[in-house]
Amino acid sequence: MTSLVETCRISPPQGEVPPEVSFPATYFDIVWIAYHPIRRLIFFDYTESKSSFFETHLPNLKRSLSLTLKHFTPLAGNIIHPLNTTEKPRFRYVEGDSVSLTVSESSNDFDSLVSYGARDADQFYDYVPQMPPLKDEPEHKLVPILALQVTLFPGKGICIGFTNHHSIGDASSIVSFIKTWASICKFDGSDEELMSQDYRKHKPCFDRKLIKDPLGIDAIFWNKMRQIPIQSSTFPLPTERVRATFILDESDIRKLKDLVLSKRPSAFHLSSFVIASSYVWVNLVKSGVVIGEEVDANVDEYFIFAADARARTDPPVPTNYFGNCLCGGMVKVAHGELVGNEGVAAAAEATAGVIRNKVNNKAEALKGAENWLSDFENLGEIRTLGVSGSPKFDLYRVDYGLGKARKVEVVSLDGEKYSMSLCKWRDSETGLEVGLSLPKPRMEAFAALFQNGLRLISPT
Image 1 (spheres, rainbow, N blue to C red):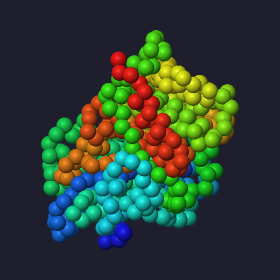
Image 2 (image 1 turned 30 degrees about the vertical axis):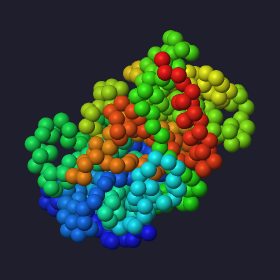
Image 3 (image 1 turned 180 degrees about the vertical axis):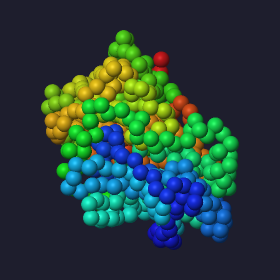
């Protein structure tokens, strides 16, 4: 069981941040305003005594969090969500605002939680911080931005849980916060080491003026998003799902790439991302067939992914910009083609084509952005696979003074119909780790297809 130890509020150091920080949401932010929170868990081995945790490590986590918020002050604030008005949302921190930090203790099976096989998805919510409820004010609602939780598994490990509102920042931004907190914590709750580095280059930049919007896309998006009622977030329980993690090592990726090239000799841009996502996409679609799903061969299947647009805007946005700055790709392949003998090759060729012609083409990456929301509405109910995360964001190397992380879980996958997480494999710089959350029969079918498919590919 898991028991609550305390719930506290952590603020930036008093007197070291401005009394108020406020800035508007851009169209990149507004598109996520009604999206479910992003929930991540990072597990670490920790075999020191319980008293050592509560007397030394927990105070250091709190102290270092406060110092981190000195550099990421808006995360301690709220989204100002206007009601019945065309005024657009803003992010605001005022003196006294703080981040909710929950501390808990669990006697549950740590080794099972950090394993790779199928596990009941519901059990992970013991370690996921619940976002505080919305606060009502006369003309707007205050929407919390961030909540954190630290859970001790005595004699076994620690789990640090993160829940954030997507509209404050994309994965690149949130990971920069996580890494900074870890770095300060590792140096015993001091940011002197951080400041001694080339800090100006990496200091988070919240300047929304960097996002140019001559077409007024923010107003177009807000006109649609303001019609969606804003509510306090809840956990999607019971999920009726299991979670599992699958590995593609360097050899697997190479064999799959060779397979694609044998079917599509002229294929290009066959990155590890393209290969891994194509293989997962095909096996997910096939797993539906295995469990009895009937889909016409001509029905379109979609793979949707996001890409960092900082270097794709005109002018480019600095890499240390903290906020959402994403473009995306939508890959379409007919169902019959995906489940056919050349499904992986077809998926990889189509995905690589979208990356080359749309995502990596600066003239095309953000073209038609004003129509993003209406385009998705016009698609109606479609069959999609999405992806969360990227091999670029290596959370396994985040070190809170505890060493390399034992396991990373993207719990917010439970809120998606079909989505996968993707990151570097813990035990390799070149392998990839894929996380899925699916109903148990679908997961069993997928796991069999995934493993059998790799066994059937002959090395070249």
